[in-house]
Image (cartoon, rainbow, N blue to C red):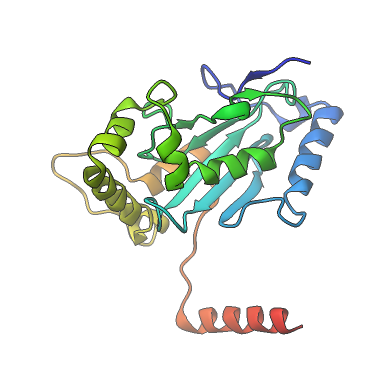
Length: 235
């Protein structure tokens, strides 16, 4: 049995569903169904397959604790046609200020045994739990400079921690801002010096309408949702 790095050296062209073998489709279905099992998917992470292809899953990560608390991070999981022999790639939609996220490709790099993917031993559930763990202080403390993909962020975390916390706080607020979550309803104001698109707009254009998108709800709808949740818990 061999292992392969959990990363892609270059973006892979999209593969149409009709080009996927029945065996690969079955492997992906088993992986996705396993996330529905109790504790199959970490709390705060939500995954849905993309309508654009079986090899592309959309995800969102609500960070509840640690220096990134309050962040809402959207990402995609890209499976190679050779899966499960070769591992998937997890790439964030926007810039994530993290020592294990490549600032150019936005690809998150796993540590430990998941850095070398082992087919039918490693699974998407393991990948997602490792992702969540990597945003906690204890895990951040243990990252060495040699391991870090973003050396600048690593240096700030270890040598200028208050600056690191200030920058992550700013990014957390941006990720949960209305202009980021609802770019169509609350477009970011134009800047005379910058033409860069907001993260919400870049997500829609890059991943298409099939990506996870948020919808703002009013007070009455929120109340109905809470009441329905309460009834489900009581039942």
